[in-house]
Length: 188
Image (spheres, rainbow, N blue to C red):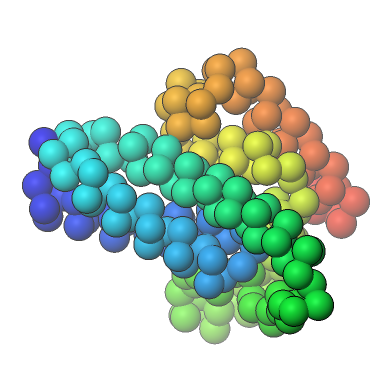
């Protein structure tokens, strides 16, 4: 059973990665923040007595379900706004946000070797942009496996699919990312 401190420590440790994962999925900073906050509240409210070792899987399942709920709500909103488009003003997405704002870089590293730091930053931006081009399920599997570090079985449970599907999604994501990055001159 997780104590309050363990729950707080877990939420603090997963906060930035969960935000980035939600941002990749919905591509709107405010919506991503809302999704992460909702997911954290659901975990704390519904699973306060869950064992600490189960928190990562439970949280990932909640996060993915909250992202899916976001898409469902937006689908209904788009339908209604289409019907009432003359009455409802549209809002353009804010494209001015830096996609790697949450990337932590040591200040002295940038000063020690600025060329290397800049080259790594460019590659990170290319990877970030390439991840956004992946289909949603491939991106989800890729992020859960390689960003969150979940194994195939855990990823399958979070995604609600078979282990074979996870392997297929990850394989396709890897091949697609490698091809996109190779076109941009980044060889992995």
